[in-house]
Image (cartoon, rainbow, N blue to C red; front, side):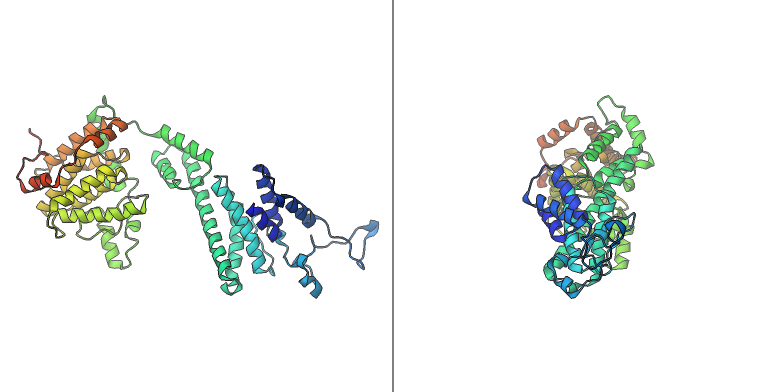
Length: 447
């Protein structure tokens, strides 16, 4: 067991105790366990009488350091070369209230080995989805801080890499503790959005299994009822008209600061941030919504370029192929659907060019006729569509989308996915006919 061997090498009482307890809980019987038990007994044993020292009445020895080799104990040159005395007394690094003190004359490499043992133990707890204590992380953090302040010249390249890995372990542990704390706070209340954000933050985190299970049950019990076949659409639309469901309040929408973070020029960054959900001919710096996969974020930028090419902002020889690519991506990748709808909203919102805006609405109708938004985005999209149903030019397209979305919301989730699989994506030639007026417009409902 690697962590146990590191604790033995470091001669760290705290790390030895934790490692032995961890091995015992796991039911492991390894050769190092006997060695660790013997070493721990030796470290905790009172020092033997040294010839020439005074003794008290009754044969008691005067007060002395906890064991030989303590950095607070004066050493002779012979002591300094003794293998058993080459380690500092790392017991003083144990928790003492909120004080994580390290001996002032502790050798950096000795502290590094003790930190490696503690880091290995912490990492094993994270992998096993165990409960992490802030004291463990703070203890490791105090050691890392001491090592960083010691200077790079004290360590080899390999040791510097080990120190960097320790910092990664500490950072991961902090995030796990913070995510667990936020989830526990959310579970105490009845705020659905807060609970949803807390569960989303736990994605990819190794939070304790029991806590994650309780969180999923709590979220499921708080989920608003989905629209059913018997639902009154008028009531649904009345709810969707509320300001709570405005697109700029979508729970997975990036903040303006996050959206413009990658742009180093202040003026351009402000321009992107201020036009995050309104039309701009600029290429977006990142996705509008929070996507989990880096490749999806990269794909979102390509989708925006497709929209700009469809609208004629970017030069292209076949605009209809751009719309075809967008619809095809949404049909094959459910995780990108809310990003696609949000980008179309951005494209038509504040777009003063009637032709460009019209093409954006055609793309909206094409998409919604093939696939609907994710369940958590339905009311946000409906809110935006209802704002345009009375528009003299755009109204027919908005009403088509509302009617189609109504049908989607009446379906069970499995039915909806099966329906998307059965639908045939319009060809680029057919879309070209719609854009050029060569075929009847399928999105203008008869009155």
